Image 1: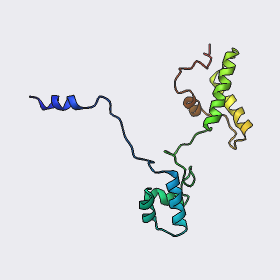
Image 2: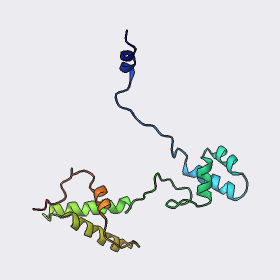
Image 3: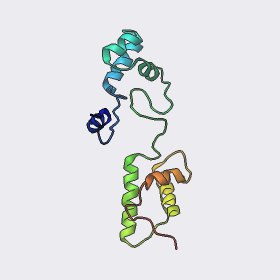
Image 4: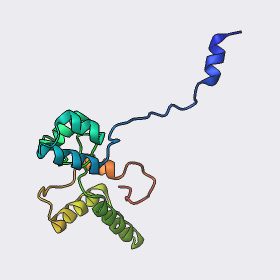
Length: 149
């Protein structure tokens, strides 16, 4: 009997990564921050009582996060260029233009995004970059762009 074959048959086909990051609730974080700021509890007791990580509690209470504020959640250091609602508006506008037979190039989509920033009063008024555009159209499934010929 070969041990390798026995172990190989029991192995899962696709590995699913599991994570326990950000498993705390924002309400618990808010309560922990309040209790620490009012000096009702220390860092360690508040983190154990409200089941939030101590380092995260300290960082949020002292406002040391560069991107997120207070008890908000967010993974990673990058933030969205536009809120999801504004990106949905842009997609709907592009689809409307497509139904009216206006083919759009990538540069035209970037210009539309710039006009959207001006309309909604964003402080960074520059053309949407190539990285944003690649994230906006991650796969070429919806045929929204015109092929340059």
